Image (cartoon, one colour):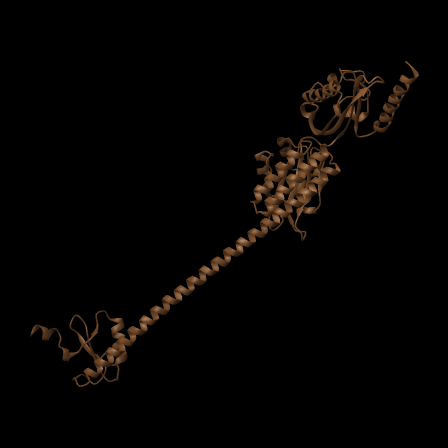
Length: 424
């Protein structure tokens, strides 16, 4: 190789060394691949960790290290760059790394650049990338969180909001998690089922109504203490002595519970994250719990306000209905009283007329209607009944007789009675 040709080659090797130095311990991914088979010449630990291989496995075709569909997708891009000599930049490229229970969804921003020798001949491809999974998840989380806040703002039913929140977290979490929300009774002494779409029905039924108190599982204790309670291994934690068998039947191994508190510090409920295997929470897990516990508090408080408003409106409606009923009865009583007054006035008028008409008619001197006690008032009015009996009395006893004896009427001899009719 001539000195002129050696200089660019040396510069290329130096550049490669610089890249190794720059990305060697970085969380960014770096790999230098050779030939159309994309043999791994060098790569940093982050690259091997991402594809699930031990560091230092070089001289192997990338297709052998990544035989899954995600690997085939990346190899197709590398083939394109090697064939065309044109670099490729991808944003938020989704791949599924690993398989079985260890599989996880990941997103990457990466650039594939062609590698050339001093003569410009293609020798391979260089990959530089950054995993954006956390950023992508954060974006999706914020989108889902914003949707939950919009649901709360438009006063969606509380069960709908809490169920949607639980499913959102379960879908976004990088590892399997089962979410439960329990709601506190007004006296804060018991917790009721709120939402738990992925927990077994028998488990939700069993813990519905559990007491709040020290040592009552993760949720009862968190509600009692008003602070998060992290149980990393249900199988050995004393808080779960009374519920360990139940948790085992449900396949639960860890439970992190966060109290849901109102703005005044009152207990609204608990927000729990269950796991199938013993787990210690990361800072991101605790931040997620705090975020959604706050969101749940907002939804529950809004629900309580709406319920109180509806109850107040119902009481006001009931009071208005009762007032209307009282007014209606009062009007009916007033009308009846007026009718009675009119009837009494009419009776009094008839009695006065009868008294005047019969003033000259011979009759007993004293009232005959006083009963055993007698009555010394003057007899002024004659009354009779349909059986032909008649008597004279004072206005007071005549009125009493008319009101208490059936078919009694005021008799007027001037007008003639049944005898006059028979002798017509």
